[in-house]
Length: 86
Image (cartoon, rainbow, N blue to C red; front, side, top):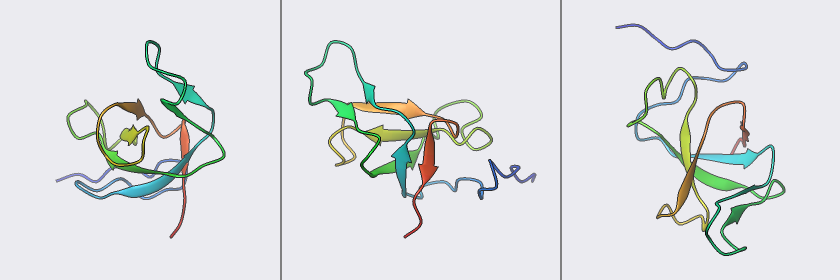
């Protein structure tokens, strides 16, 4: 079993682990109302995007717009967010 390299001095994501993140930019989904967005000044709960290729190596996570873990959500990789320490 191989281990994932650290991402920007971060520990690799673990399966099923929820993390708190802050996006680097504001994000919005086209076709949804204005309130369906991520605000770069707020923190959100993210979960690993385990169904995506290279999810662990690239730090891919799903972030729910309404912060409840439900749809709709957006896929971010480790360049798009910072992990907020508890």
